[in-house]
Image (tube, rainbow, N blue to C red; front, side):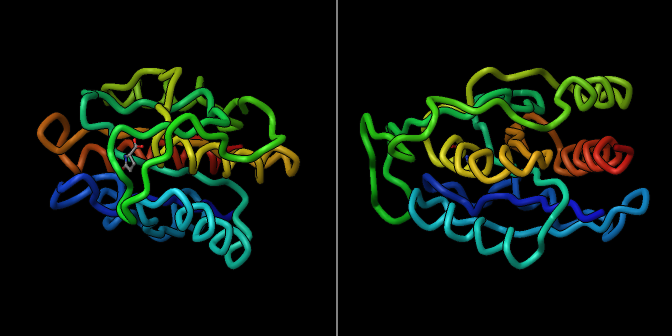
Length: 189
Ligand code: PCA
């Protein structure tokens, strides 16, 4: 069993991004599952391309993409990715889509195929603040979630997205512990 975790590069002038930094101290194996980690660019076009290359190279059994939600205080697994891009700020390539469709002809939305309820229970048991989120927004995080689910849904592969809070709200070590819990839930499947 192989689990791919991705995080994002810094964006919007931030010096770091905990969504990737939290993965730097992930163990290489968790409960028998091999953990692969990678960093994605905060770019509407390049991020799904980079993700697709990772999926082809590693052929993971489960995929968890992470991103920073600067205004949240908890770990928030996302329930749904929508076929819509609408950015308040340009991405790291200077592109700012407004009212755009991500994949023309694609379904309006996909539900996460991660066991979000089990993940929330495990985080609760580990006393890590977490809550279900019903919107990943319409920036690059939702873009990667929608593209990921368009790949994973027909393959019935558990895949989805989790937003993490800034380091001022939750220490990086606790975010790493949260992702170890997520990996344990997936490894137990
Ligand atoms: N958070 C942004 C994009 C990259 C990141 O870490 C988002 O929530 O869309």
